[in-house]
Image (cartoon, rainbow over all chains, first blue to last red; front, top):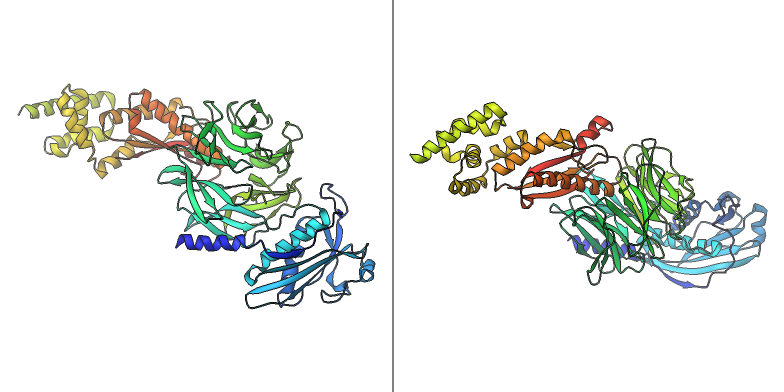
Length: 426
Length: 188
């Protein structure tokens, strides 16, 4: 029974990859995502037509693009065209619009829907994207995210994040803790793993097909991997100690973890195929929370060998350890940015926990939050955003902000206590 | 008849100990009953094995330990297995915790078939993972202390709950200090 519902859940998630006839996006970059403060691109997203819920789809597309903070929007009332009428640059130039999006649903059946989306460059008066999408009718929301991804890529030259998911721990008085999944915007929350006991923050494989987590199994800590392709769960490690999952390596072949099986918690690397366990640290202090760099060459982790928890970096084989953080006396839960240029972590300052970033060479530390307690940061797949746990509104919730700390807002719903977010890498 | 003499001797011996050393209540309480209900008496019998060099009776007593009654467990939990507290972000055994741990090791040495689970806990501050590691170290430090007091390591298991099972849920030092603890569960 549990397996069936899990399979259904996973099927719905995987069907996000919709069918499409694509023409290649132009290589021109209209918005430079890497220069903050650059002019926002004025865009007009016309209501999609052809089905009653067409405008709901275009509204999701608009809200996705708005989330990036790279676009500005022109009031729909000023539009002279609809999605059904032909594009004419002259209708848009007076409005100061640079890009126009149209979407028309057609060949819609009871169960499926097809939509053709066109994106136009007003200045050049030409089409820059024309794509047809087909999906099941109950998947119009992920379809909208897919469309937004393509528009974003056509305009910025970068991959969009609108189909990424955030795994987190949800707490319910009756059910206890379970792993949940939600879209990046906090919608479509689904409970996927319930163990009826303690379960910890999950970690994604880089292909987004596996999720590793630690949980308390009959009084022992164990590490499981949930495989979305096969809709199966496998226990991969349990050493009758405090065994906690870290990161998958980028190639997906190894799992970093910490285990106290030899006395004090140390970092290990588990080869998932052979189950060979390679010990990386040998200190008699606490070594936990290993996170691997995107190139797979280094590990950042937490150690209290200095007397307080601080971040350290070592090579993937455990050699050349160096201390990364010297400010603050409680630095934990590090994670590398997708480009490898930043490490995000939680620092205690002024008696509260805040999210901070630091460069891997130890320079440029920036504290990004200032209200409540903020912990467990996780980068978006494009590195432009950070999800984190905050109690600033009372009970814990999952929040998102830009990598520089702007636009902080709660994405998890108020009716669920949510923490331990882990953003998928794709 | 010989056995009864031994028992009476043992009882007298313990009572005199109790006066001198302030033996914990559950050890002295059953002695009163002993004369009448010697079969049910675990506490007194165990103390006898500790104090009387009669090796054959040790085995009998350790068998009896397996049938430790709910009431005996309750009394032991209430009087012997008290929480051991820790300093913030530390896992070393505090001096103030040592009398409690010595009492626990004495009890463990006199109840040779009893095993315990030592749980390590933390206050709410800090990451779940780091606190699980810290709780692990607190439980292990507690176990090491008891091992050094003579309790066999095989009779003790440890587990960490990190900050996940607080005793007290307010956000202040009074509460945090109660939550930074090792707790004990008699497992059989």
